[in-house]
Amino acid sequence: MTFLVNDPRAFADEALAGFAAAHADEVRAVPGGVVRASATPPGQVAVVLGGGTGHYPAFAGWVGPGFAHGAACGNVFASPSADRICSVARAAENGGGVLLGFGNYAGDVLHFGHAAERLRAEGFDARTLAVSDDIVSGPPDATAVRRGIAGGLAVLKILCAAAEAGYGMDETVRVGRAANAATRSLGVAFGGCALPGAEKPLFTVAAGRMGVGLGIHGETGTEEGPLPSADATADLMVDRVLADRAAAAGPHDGSSAGRPERAAVLLNGLGAITYEELYVVHRRVGERLAAEGITVVAPVVGEQVTSLGMAGLSLTLTFLDDELEGLWRAPAAAPAFRRGSVAPRPPRTDDLTAAHQVPPVVPGTAASRELAARIARALRTVRDTIVTHERRLGDIDAVAGDGDHGIGMRRGAEAAVRAADEAVALGAGARTLLSRAGAAWADHAGGTSGALWGAALAAFGVELGDGEEDPAAGAADSAADGEGPGVAGQDLGAGGREFVAGGREHVAGTTRPGTGAEAAHAARVVRAVRAAVDAVVRIGGARPGDKTLVDSAVPFVERLEAALPVAGFAAAWTEAALIAGEAAEATAAIAARLGRARTHGDRSLGTPDAGAVSFALIVAALAPAVHPAEGGD
Image 1 (cartoon, helix red, strand yellow):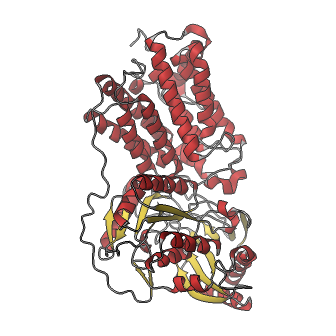
Image 2 (spheres, rainbow, N blue to C red):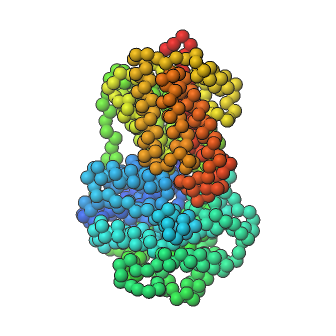
Image 3 (tube, helix red, strand yellow):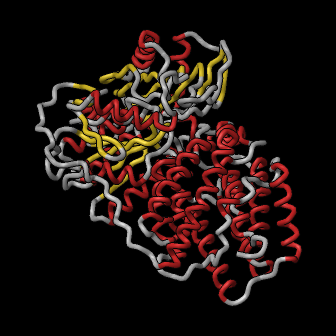
């Protein structure tokens, strides 16, 4: 349980501000995270780490000489947005390029990959490296699909030491990949963690039981058994990690041969296990490794990658050759990780206040500005819909995920509305407004859904443009006054049920396609919807059947395109929204194949996908916006 909270939505930002204030001599705050307070030698590869809040010391606690140059910090258990990552990377880079390190989660891969693309477009040499050390989340012959847990400490420490030693970008990447290939971790838990402000934990473990194979975002274990003794817990973790060592160990550069004899060891507390308990377990771990002929090198015992207040621990082994051992032992001075002696560094004296700048608004045409104002009103409907259903979306997501979908969508929608209102005040057209709203959504929501909704809004805006004639021709004017959220298979309330019934009457034939300019406008908006859905598919990599947002979005746009020539725009949208709702509910019969829920795919059976449901809720709530008002508009 998280006890000390103000506004849960501000928890991550307030924690980061407090951290930066407490370590002002070691780090400096920049938009999106922190960077070293000391100067970095020109031409040195800058390593920027990152992930969601809730894992401290990872990742901000590892910023300092010998370790990372910066850390991008997202919301609780949510990836930082590409905007935040780019902001930190620009502030950290000093002529040697930037290497982005993170855990192998869908949201992190998406956001850090997008950030690397943007940085390369700006002229930086930008690379990525995803840590994938968790042995329960993928088979030994498919380590690329494994998620990253506490092994990130060893992998990223070695990676950063290579950069600090003056390795070039290619060699730093090589070392990081070798360290990742040599690292294996396993976690166990005795109780779950709760998000700030939440009334219950994301999962529970019955008294006298222990979960095995848990994640670090509130994901439950893959199995459960009776609570063992400390030594038996150590034996379980050692046995399972060593079973993977044939795939993990061995020389990465030919400098060693035969059976590995050295390993970096991390016994990591997840937030609620005492250090004394960890030391009791570490005693047995050392005995077991010695019996296996493995020498423990510079062990770390304590909290390095936590999961808020989870009662649990994890064991990480990184099998070492001469090069990796030297880098693991190398000095470092970060707020939460110190090793050896690091010579004092001169402080930074440059101005970091302008590390992240938003381009100024170029006013759109009168028609596009009017459309932008209508879109801003529609975004308020989206926000209100998410607020209404926030708790349900979180509950759905918690079945096989981390339970943050509702709060993440709310943060994103609220930020998008603020950005849209500001853009309207500055005279923005539709494209600029949607670009800013999408960036704000991605920045504040974090996670996979934040990136996907941000990209969808931006793609929608590209099709509408800033200077063309209003393609909606009055269709969106009633957005702010719609009947309210609803989706097939849910209790919509009397008004919602009447609306759905009325929609079916229109589909049956009382609504006819428009002609001339109206038909052209409608076709253009449908093209914009298609562009938005295509962006989601392209960037997220999901396909129908993967149990994601795509399972609702693709049927929606396909029905919208098919119905438009026959029924007209308003009726086509209503029909497509109903199809989206049915498709969202149908995901209950699908096992998750992508994202964090993939590890517990079968556990998601019987529950629809939260992303698909939220999409269906939104398009259903927007139906009144495209429904002709009595008397016309």
